[in-house]
Image 1: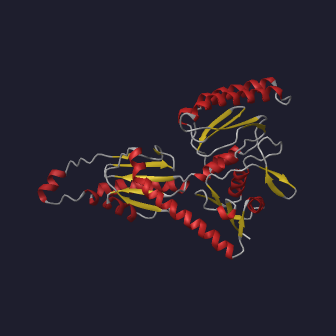
Image 2: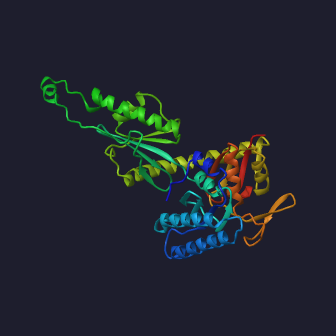
Image 3: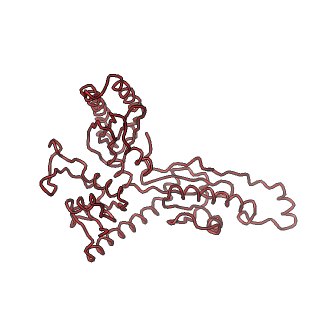
Length: 364
């Protein structure tokens, strides 16, 4: 299954495709015994998709055969043993995509000329991706992670590896001019190369960055110049080669503090906006502002989900079986906010209980 797509991939997924572009969404479960139902629900979902394809007069036999073949390929890519909270499958002539997402999605099958991307966009906004660089004198590794997992990033010149053996070390030691490891010119050049490679990565994919290594190594990296705008240094040696699980453990307390600070800043921004008459609170106000493109900062409780339907000039509660129900209105709002350049921040449940679980800072 693919990792969550970046904004450029989401933009491509939103582009029009030959009919039918099939979107399948299904809630999944991380643990037993609930996850025992997931394979059955997935088979039923695939069967529904086949039925809709067969019943649609706009789908030719050749096109139906091609899309059904892609459905089978997508099914092979699904790994329910490592499922999270939702499964998203996109299938169209010539392509298929599968994602496991850390955010619940409504169960549905949609045939259209575009993919249903709102749930993916909301899931991507809910996680906090980061880069981590582990620095040692002989190995520099780059790690790509988020709230769920960390994995080594191979490519873009990483990992960088070299030997610490110095053929001239015996002569240097005899004459007393053997420098410390991080004052050695070869080490400086090695870390400068790592610095340049990292700059290329963070420029193309900006994220918070963690630099992990001994104090002398971190000092050298800082000496070579700034990297990401949001960089945190962690003095911890011995992690040049990871492993990923250990890197994740080192980062967890730092990430928890960062998240706490970000939550506080988002809530403070809402209070400031309230005093400046730039505040929207509750589903009706926020939805209207989001679809007008007036949201600058959207703040949502992490597990806020609700089903509504349009009634006159506002949204009212509904049940999923209503024909005009909007099961993922919160994700619609999140995607719309992202599309119009807003920042989206998720906060713990009940943090916005007095504001209807969702609120925003307005541009005007």
